[in-house]
Length: 501
Image 1: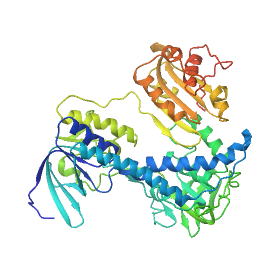
Image 2 (image 1 turned 90 degrees about the horizontal axis):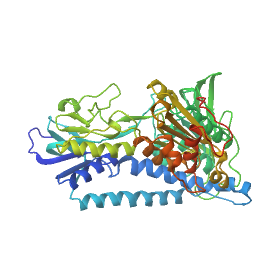
Image 3 (image 1 turned 90 degrees about the vertical axis):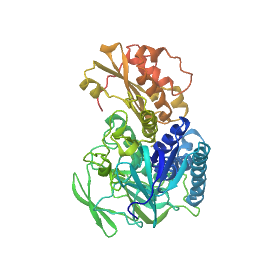
């Protein structure tokens, strides 16, 4: 890199081509800005290439394979085999179509795409390096959207062989006989549940006393029961000490234990046989002697190599960029997505992009959502929007709630999936304003946007209860929960107050 290299002037520079970054580039271009987008790897970022999209495609493969185990109960006998190598080819096609579509949108919008890693040289100059080449850009304004990467444990460093991060796990082309997942958050339960359906013996190890730490306990307990019923071994309140050869050394409520990385069994309560009807044949079928450790304990913001202090950009103790409500991090520098406080969710980054571009264009804007929906594509699915009863009470609301069990839903019963519930939380002292909705069950992810709309619009329980939902659909469960919270349940016999469990 040559000091004093002549820089190219750009109007708006976007660093990072994930959902937040490419959304910012497209919105800014539509507003008349001249935009340059810097991406060090592939357009679409983690989400489209190695995260949200391929993981959900793999889950669909697993759900399809798992039909064989579920169908017998409704009078259909099926057999399924999994060729994960062929499945990965299909997943690659899905990813390619989406990333190719975004690339075309950027071209159509006139966005200049530069490949390389960006770092501040001065407060308004950025160096972009690719191999031995370097280019410099002077920007009028900038949006930082560099995303995050998996957290690596010192006791279990990623080795690309037996110890994998979530990206490597999603790229497996054979179903392992054993999969041990360290971390029971949303990534861990999605991966663990999917590979269990594909035929792996799965163990999930979680330090907290529940799966999905930070989410309502009731949701986590329903999911835990379902995973255990599918043969997944779950060890809660368990700390990973390290790896000793072919064993994972852990310390739990009953003391130290060793979990075999290879072989069947899973090393704990809840392990079971592969799902009924799953033959495991085909080139990608389970290999009983092959096992992997997947570390999924969180994500770290990609801010450490950006040279942020040189631009006057501050970070907090976790390395996240400190931003104002308009996403401003320094003079003419805005930050969005995983590198800022809040949940690391693609839809949050996309929404923040709208605010950042608006503010960077000189107009007033603020990111102040009433709720950001969070969905776990486990089986059953989990979706949570807004406040729990406890959070609402702490915020000063006169909180009330009602859980409508999906065992009373005609649609859920017709799908042979009656487990779970839809819970609505409202403020009795505020006219019954809906403050939160929390759901667990098959297909509830598709209700999350409706729930978020209710919270965002300040809908009341009456509004939700009087909205006519089509029958028979899962959407009726939201109206039923509102009716119950109003004291006039229709398809359940009595009110069930939230118990926090």
